[in-house]
Amino acid sequence: MSEGHVVFEYEAQNVSPETLANLGEGHIAYVKQIRSEDVPGLFPEAPKIAPGLKLFALHAADGTPIMLTDSREAAIANAWSNELQAVSVH
Image (cartoon, rainbow, N blue to C red; front, side):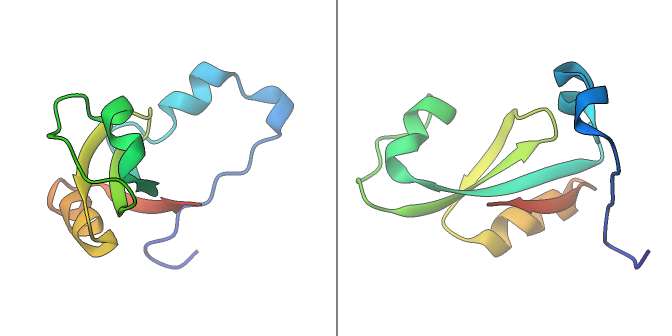
């Protein structure tokens, strides 16, 4: 396995939702592209943002939102600065 890649091999029927949610906790974060219309549900404390913008959210392995940015690179840099391995979710 090359550096920077994380591989998990599980049979889907053997992994509980709780186990899957905790997989990588404290070590892995994921970057997900979102629309500005999705921000209030994920980041209720965020200021109002104009509709129609493409943004990127960094989430902990369990789905907890960590940060919001307009750049995928900034989200990855934030993960690295917090010693988290960033993975993308499409």
